[in-house]
Structure formats: structure tokens, C-alpha cells
Amino acid sequence: MAARHSVAHLSRRVSGAVVPSPLRTVRPKDVIAHTRAFATPVPPVTQNAAGSKGPTAMVFLNMGGPSTVDEVEDFLKRLFQDGDLIPLGRLQNYIGSFISSRRTPKIQKQYAEIGGGSPIRKWSEYQNVEMCKILDRISPETAPHKPYVAFRYANPLTEEMYNKLFEDGFGNGKGGRAIAFTQYPQYSCSTTGSSLNELWKWRQRLEGKAGPGTIDWSVIDRWPVHPGLVNTFASNIEKTLAEYPEERRSKAVLLFSAHSLPMTVVNRGDPYPAEVAATVYAVMQRLNFSNPYRLCWQSQVGPQPWLGPQTQTSVEEYIAKGQKDLVLIPIAFTSDHIETLFELDKEVIGESGHTDTVKRVESLNGNPMFIDALADLAKTHLDSNITCSYQMGLRCPGCKNERCAESKKFFAGVQNSLAV
Ligand code: FES
Image (cartoon, rainbow, N blue to C red; front, side, top):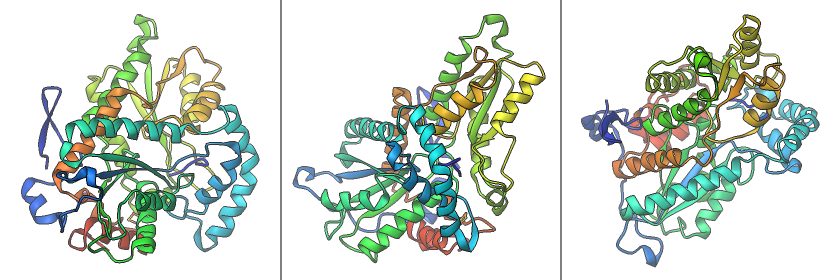
């Protein structure tokens, strides 16, 4: 998904209420029938972990962003050369390189305007470190939990993260357990799928065949309606709504905004639009449908058709119809990035002519409620012995990418891979 440049139910209690677990898409008996349990006990990789099943590597996957203006060109090149993200055909590398060099000066200016770089690395590292502290407390049997970040297009890249795992004593004959935890709550083959294909590629290059002594991977691949995620979004929305005078509050329109996808990806059968819609509906349920709402899509790039309606156009059209109280909610990312700080704040809101009535809900960033949600997701996964959601094994009906097939066979297990 693009960047403009850039889970039936096992029940569990959260805040006293029994709620469905979003990761577990399969019934208990299905878990036994369909999931690949960890085949071999994982030996501790350091002496200080003796007696526990740890340490456990917690690897956050995300697209990343350039931390400095100088990193913009490489970031854009990797992004536009990723056929999983923006399919450009057989000349992907050539066209991708051409587009990225043309866009670099403009995008560098945008990063300069938001402080000289993307905050996504800072937030990802902070969220993971804080989550691991909670996990050490609530899951001592898998402690210590060690935080790693692997970005798809910016440093630290997947190869760098994998070599760091080796340096820290994972793999290379010592085994160990690593969890690939996507930081895209809603699954798209363009985002989480692309990151997993990249992780699979580097795992094959650096470790070869799976076996004793290699790292044992499992994946948290989607969590669109996790109660902690939904609650954090809802409480941030309530905070922003409180800024409107009481008599106008319930009439403010909530505009949920997510990265768009090229229609070729949507029509291939990508699960993302449905999962984003699931998050939106869950948030609205939590808000008791207090306000009217719509889901729109941002960050389209290039001439091909993308999923709409576009966020900026939606804002302009509502304003033209007289609806000026609009609340923008970035619903598909876990921290601030260029698409919130520049595109929504400076372009959509800044150019609306109504900066006093068009507002943006703050991003999840360092919100403790959100970090508790991450820890809950990870703890549920660590306890489950499930390698990934059952859904992840199914390829898109229109998928022609053999890397998807191989990556799904590896992560989901051959017996759980469907249509490969
Ligand atoms: Fe969806 Fe390959 S594009 S599984």
C-alpha cells in the first residue's frame, strides 16, 4: 500500500469483559487440526535465560521512513521498486528508479517541513522496548524479550535486523524463538505480505533450510479489531470531539483515513479494504455510533486507478456541502509519519480553509493504552503456540507471485497453505 512515497473465537477477558481474540481466527479444535506447533523445543540461547523458554526476539515489521532528509532517495527507490507494493510490471526496477529520482527533491522538502525526517523509527523502537518490559513481567516463561525493528524501505532493513539477531545469539546453531509482529493492524499483501516475503528471503539466504539450530519464527500477522487497539482509537476520537462546542459535537463527521491501494491490488483480492473497514466498524461500535462517519483513502500516487474516495477530495466536498466540522482519524498506522504530519496536517487540513473546524485525532505513538494492547497481543500469541493466523495461509485469488507461495509455505506450514 502505498505510500505516497511511502482474526471462531477463543475468548479472553479484557477489562472485565469477555471479548473475542482477534488473532485467533480458528476454533480450539481447529487450532489442533490446522496449526503447526513448534516442532522442537527451543533451547535457551544465553545462560541468563536458563529455566525459561526465552529469550524471545520481538521483531516489529513496518514500512519505515527516512530518519533524515539524506535517506529519502534510497527510501523512495526501495519503495517504488517493490512490486508487492506498487506493481509496475517487468520494468519495475527501471521505472521504480526513474519515479523515485524524480520525486526525491519534492519529498525531501516535505520531510524537511516535518522536522527533517520521519519519526517512525523513534516510535517503533520506543513502542517495542516498552512492550518488551511489560512482556518480561506478564510472560516470565518466555523472558527476556528482546526488541528488534525491521523496516521494508528504510534503516534498519530486514538484513540488518537478521544480522543483529545472529550477533545477539539467535540462530547459527543456537536456535531461539523470534516473533515477527506486523505493525500494520490490517493485513495487506502490499505491506505485511511484502515485509514477510522480504523476511522469508533473508531467512533463506542467511539460514538456509529450517532445522535444528535455526531461528524458529512465528507471526502476528493481523489484529484489526483487537479491543486495546479499538479502545485507543475511540478514546483519542473522544478527546478530539471534546474540542467542539457541545451543541455541534454529535454532528461532527468522523472521516477515517487509510492508505489507499491501486485497484489492481484490490481486484487481486487483497484483504486490506475489508480489514480496515472492520477496524472502523469496531471503533464506531465502541463509540456507540455517536457520530456519522465515512472511510476514505489517502496517498494515491501515479495515474493508475486507486481505491477511493480520496481523503482530500472528501474533505473538500463535505466543506462545499456545508459540513465543516470534520474529524480526521488515521486508522491504519500505529505512529505518526509523513502521511499524518505532512499530508493530513499540512495539505488536507492546512489547505481546507477551515483549520479551526477540521481536526486530526492524534496518532497512537507512545499511548500507554496502545502499548498495553501490543503486549496483550504478543502474550496471547506467545501462549498460543500458533505460528500465524489461519487466514494467512490463503493466497489471494489473483496472486501470481511465487514469493507469496513460498513465504506462506514457510510461515504457515505446508499443511496450512491454501491455493499455493
Ligand atoms: Fe496476495 Fe500474493 S498478492 S497472496
